[in-house]
Length: 215
Image 1 (cartoon, rainbow, N blue to C red):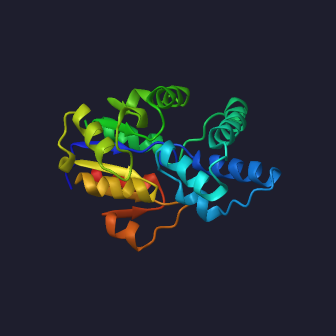
Image 2: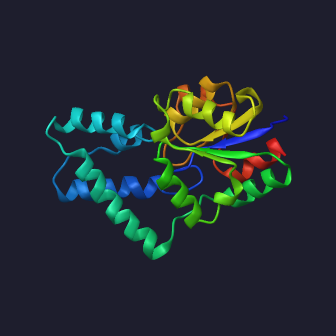
């Protein structure tokens, strides 16, 4: 396989942060007596913030203050980051080093707002690997629409069909498939179902395993 660009999701793909988000959401929900099934929070992975808000209001009622709930989650997770740093996924730096050595430009395509994403990438010292960062606030139609992946490919000047895309979520892998990229699904918290498997060209449990397929 010859790929000329690589597009990466951020949370859950480069960073082991989805686990922290979900565990913290559930802790807050338990404290407040909210019935929040794990399947529900997993279904929100990779969605734009507005869609997640709609899902929470649909579950808990129109008066549910999702943004206060989300803000409390981030307050606690940011305290974890201040104390322990932002955790990188196994194999992230090695894969990015290999892409750099092979002259393959990389971009981030994340539902996180761009400024917040850049800040996280700087804190973990991996911003230097990326020629472009596209945030969810820069795109009208979020994942599973392909727009953010197509824009990321445009910014590194590589046609989408010549790019590989790496994701951990259902909505992300469907977006990569819709963009016409070679799709790599890295699963962890969310075990892939038939729809995700059909959208993925390659399925791995670690970023380490991608290196042999693109270099």
